[in-house]
Structure formats: C-alpha cells, structure tokens
Length: 471
Ligand SMILES: [Zn+2]
Image (cartoon, rainbow, N blue to C red; front, side, top):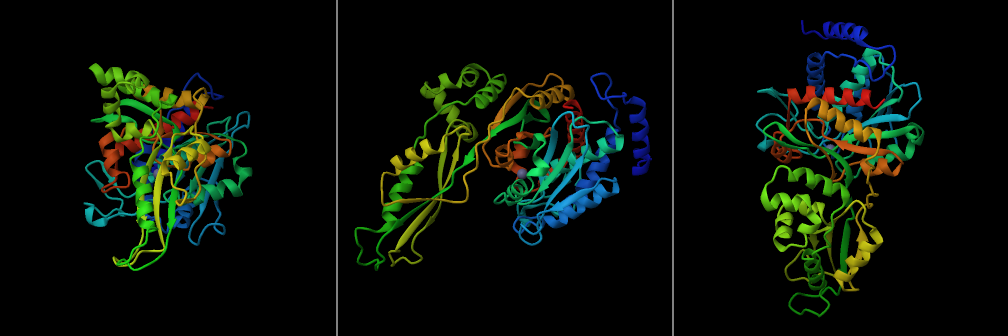
C-alpha cells in the first residue's frame, strides 16, 4: 500500500475530485502529503548519495540525476553551461508552463555541498542513512534537502495538472559554496531563461525555533555584502639580524590592529528592526525594551553592550571588518620583501561602498598599505516587502503554524541571491523547515547534518502551498 504507483493514482484521483475548474480562492487542491513526504525522503536519499563536495563540485552528476528524475515525470529539462564551467560541473533548468498572464516564479537551489570531516560524523555522510526519524547526510539541510522540497512541489503540481498563471521555473546551480560561478554563469549566459522571472525563492537563514516550536517565521529580504580586501605592504628584504626601519611586517601588523579594533558605526536598518521587534515578544524586562527599540538601546551603554554581546546581533547592526589570513616571511631570520593580510569585510545590505572605502582608508591611515580586492564585491540585495510573494510566504506559514509571527530579517552569510537580484528579480530566502535554531547552527557546514522526515514533509507542503497561492 505504500508503492509509488498507488500513491500517484490516489493523488490523481484526489486532485481530480477537488480541483476547481480554474485556480482561484475557492477550493484548494488536495494532495496526499504523507505519500509525497515518503517519496521526497527517498529522492533526498538518492541525492545525498551523489558526492557533490565543492571543491571540485561534480555537479554534472547531480544535474544528470535531476534530469532523469524529471524525465520519468515527462518533464523536459536542460543541463547547461558544461563548457563554460570547469570540467564535471553544470547548471540545471526546467520549467512548467503557466498561461503567461503573470510573470514566472523560480525555485532555485545549489547542488554543491561543503566538505566533511568524516571522523566527527556518527554515520557515513554520503550513505543516505535514516536513523530515529532523521535522514543524515552532507547537504540534508544546506541545501539538497531544500532542493528536494522544491523538486517534489514541482513534480506534484505537474502530476496534478493544476493550471498555473505563472511559469514555474526550477533552477539548480553549481558552486554556491565557493565563488558562485554556477549562478553567475547561468545569469550571464541565459538572460532569455530569466527575462520573464519576477520572483525567486532560495535558501534563507533560520527561523527562531525552540524545541520544535516556531517562535518566529523568518523571511530573508537582504544579505550582508562581501567586500573582501587584501592589505599589502612592500619593504626591503634583509637578514633579520640587521633590520631596517621599513619592515613590511611591522607596518602591516599596525594597520591590521587598527582594523581589528575599529568600532564601525552602529545603525538599525528596517529589516533588522522588524526582526528584533518580533524577538522582543520572547524577552522580558529591559531586554524586551531594548529589542523593541534598538536605536534607543544603542544610545544606552548597557543596552548597547547587551545587544552587541550576541555575535549575530552585532553583525546585524554594523559593517564587520575581520582580519583573517596573514602572510609574511617563511623564515624567522628573514625580513620579507612583502607582507599581506586578508580582511573579511561584510557590509550592511544598503551600504554605499565608496563611502565605506573612504572610512576604511581613514582607519588604515598609512599610504604605504596597498588595498586590493579579493574576488568580486557582491551586489546590493535588499528585497521589497510590499509584494504578493512576500505576503504569501508569511500567509502560508501562518496557515501551517497557526498564530506564528512572521518577520523579515537579513542574512549575515552569503548566498547566490544578490546575483539574481542584480538581474532584476525579486528574491526571498526561506528555510522551509521547523528546524531548531541550535541544530541549524551546529549542523550547517558542521557534523551529522540531518533533517527530520517530518520536516521534509512540512517543506513539501509549504512549497506547494506557496507556489499555488502566489498564482
Ligand atoms: Zn547553501
């Protein structure tokens, strides 16, 4: 009774009974969600077994697998950019056609995963092991689990034959975990595939969830901008026993110390104010007051110290400047001709980069320190809140988790969203799971990454409802 064919037949019957003539506000199509959950779990097991650890990525194999899955459903798809990307890598695209009366919605995920330290895992990260109601594997959350939720929604809507207004686009990219080569190549090479896309949903950072209870449902509407810089100082290479005044290590170290202790300006952008206001409901006393009005709290020494003592809140409230890599001599007795430091700088989503750069140079305060870019700066990404999709993402959460507060937030980490936003698409980040915040923090890019089977089912339902309600 649990075979796929039985479920498909049941699903088709249920849908044909319940589907109104045209999609509208009246009756909702019914889906056999338990069946879709077990089918999605099976697909996710297969997906997790394909090693797409980046580097090298190996996304051609995952793209071929996605192609085969959709081919079985009678859905054509395209494996793209195999020549533009390094060998063994690819992007992937498929579409369900709507009637074209509204612009398209794209579901986007990345196929690559970060490396594993197998010795710290309690199971094989590439076996698709199910244990105690959880499916384990690298990418179970970030982001193959989310990709499968999108894929299952895409397939279920196709099978049900539901008429759509918007084209439903499914995109899987290579290389999100490294340089974002996949999405950037896709956007550059295929403007034709993106030109009718109005909205895009991809990964977001976590909602606030404690012991399985969702306190706040998060919708990511912005992202810190990476602005990575290398500081280089040149000098004269001499023996360490007879130093000169122009030792580049010393000048560099002084500049790094100034940057590392720089108290960048604090300010509260609207998306962060909304997130803090939602969090205030879960605090009492002064903490509640400070979160409800963070701009005022920042004027108060205790309020300010409390807000900044949380590293994520600190990152929400300012540009962060973090020296990381240092390079000088390889030998204790040799003064090097050059010394360099890499600085991981993350700017608030609306930060003007020219103004920031002037401030950065003022803090370095040494014209012998040369500044260069590391990679490209990410474009600004700040999505509007007065859109149909933003409303639907919140409304669906409230339908599935009655009474849950919904709030916008920004991501402090980087995703592919800014590149799609730069192409003129309105992008939101959603983590479509009820995932405990502490589990999210320990498992994303960490050990024993896993997703509960119930969460897979929840995600499928969330995604189907979202796609259908935004039509
Ligand atoms: Zn990711």
